[in-house]
Image (cartoon, rainbow, N blue to C red):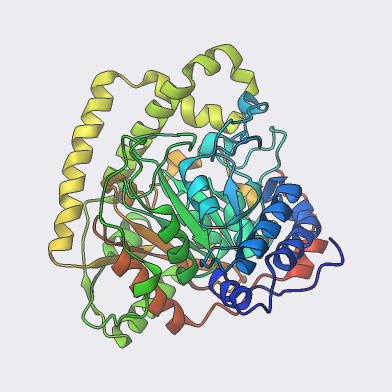
Amino acid sequence: MRGAAPVGFPTIAEAGRLIAARTLSPVELTRALLARIEAVNPTLHAFVAVTERAALAGARAAERALRAGKTGRLLGMPVAYKDTYETAGVATTACSRILADNIPKRNAAVVDRLAAAGAVMLGKLTTHEFAIGGPAFDLPWPPARNPWNPAHFTGGSSSGAGAAVAAGLTLGALGSDTAGSIRVPAAYCGIVGLKPTAGLVSRRGLIPLAPSLDAAGPMAWTVQDCAILLDAMAGHDPLDPASVAVPRRSYAGGLRRPVKGVRIGVLRSLFEDDAEVTGEMQAMLARAAGLLTTLGCRLEEAKLPPLPDYAAVIRLLICSEAYALHEANLRARAGDFSRVFRVRVMPGALVRAADYIAAQRFRTDLIVATNRLFDKFDLLLNAAAHGAAPLLADIRPEDSFSRPYVAGYANVAGLPSLAMRGGMSLAGLPLGLELTGPAWGEATLLRVAHHLEGALGLLAQRPDMDRMICDASDPRP
């Protein structure tokens, strides 16, 4: 692998054009990424397992398909999966000792969909334990680190996915999002992450955290790549009771359509008052708003119910649903869970049925109030996080209780929401913004994000590979 030809950092769209033109082979691309993983993963800990043999076999199969005349935008594209997606014959641990020996017999539904489209699986990506908690140092799997500065947090729980895409270890990844777990890593790592509308993408074979909030979605370097992945992922799954049958469409095919006249509500009170984001974030959002106006969008201020209301619903639903899922193991094997997991999930033992029902009723009120904004707006603009990625050593188990989730309102309402890099901090870390649309509004959401991405002009700026290879300082507290 060390002798693999350098291929740079192509996007899925770029690699697809090169492969179609026969100037890049899937095997050459896969070997190059495997070599990069070998060099960088000891610092980043983005992958918990690398499926080298299967990846090369898949790349060779893609080459044979190409020679036979088959085409497809994901044919031969190397991707990786958060370690909560079941993968047949490959360990799916959710980074927990509880599932250390779990070898699924079948793939998650979306893993099958990407495989059918010709994607090549590179391996499994680090997650926080069972997709909750945070970075834990008392598990066999070290927490992922941020490629822009390995001493900093990636966000979670799709932590390895954010790090791997940003570092160019994979062209795309699948994450999951219960309260921002795709969008926060996308924001902190400077990539694009999409939480789709509830029911658009099957969750069959995805290890759940809180089933009433969970969503499966794509993560990639560009909006276009996320759209290409979504085209393959979306679709009704009759074996998933939460899947919804909606007309199929090409999300990637509509990205170039103009955005003039798109109405965007700026959630200023949310990110300035409720969340109190940093001054750098506010300046970034102001610049993004100006660019959207230049592109022809119509912006004005919008106001949601208070962010702490959404946060209260999320916290109660997550801890109670997660506790219900893990109660038996928490009673029998509590010491096998990380301390972070125990701190964040065990309060669910104290939630009464009346409290849970009250939270779901209040959630209905919040859904109605949130959807009402889309009578006036096509999209909402918000911060994706409070600021740039904090130091990994500064993250504490109780952090999720200390301030509201900035991105969580989209989970409460089941709406599509996308995070992307909007700028860089003075410390050289990404600053993430968020766009949210109405249910089934992915096409407009992706189209506006694609135009804004072009106007921002940030895609050429990548993390420093040499720093990732050389900086192995231990950030543990």
